[in-house]
Each structure stands twice: as structure tokens, then as C-alpha cells.
Length: 107
Image (cartoon, rainbow, N blue to C red; front, top):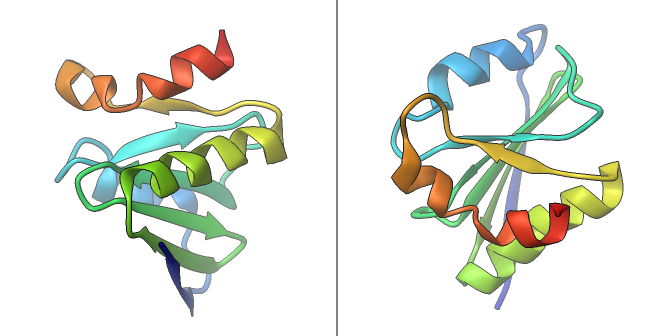
């Protein structure tokens, strides 16, 4: 098992650009934390076992080798920020179900 993270400075765009590009497209869901703001956001994709983070102009793409590793990375966001939940967008129950492991930890 291993995590593979790529970092890139993307400049003065904001997290809402990622919302439009990723949410509910190709299996991406927004990962909501209490700290979300125009300069901070997270998104997860269960089929790609990937997490995208936008943090103050920096983009991080983390790819995991296993489903367990991917879930652990998302749960770690909950530990860092106090909670995390997935928002798969409107009328996308199949994708939302991929994040059911969060319902146990956020209950």
C-alpha cells in the first residue's frame, strides 16, 4: 500500500472552480468540512481512489492503492477538521452510497 500525492501551484483560482469541474462528474463528490471556504476544499472519487485538495492556491491530488487506504485518508480529514461528510450532488444516490462509511463516524 502506498499513497501517491502530486502537488501543483494553481494560483488565484478558488475552490468553486473545482466544484463546477468535479462535483458529480465522473464520480467525484465534495468532501465537506467545517473549515470549507473559497480558499479550501476537498473532493473524493471512489472509483479512482483519489482525493483532490485545493488549499490557498495549491492543488494536491492523492491517489491510493486500496479502498481501505482511500477511506482512511478521508476519515483523516474528519480528524483534522472535526468532521467530514460527502456531498455527491443532487439526485446521485449511487455515488452518495460510496461514502456510507462516513455515516458511521459522523453519527
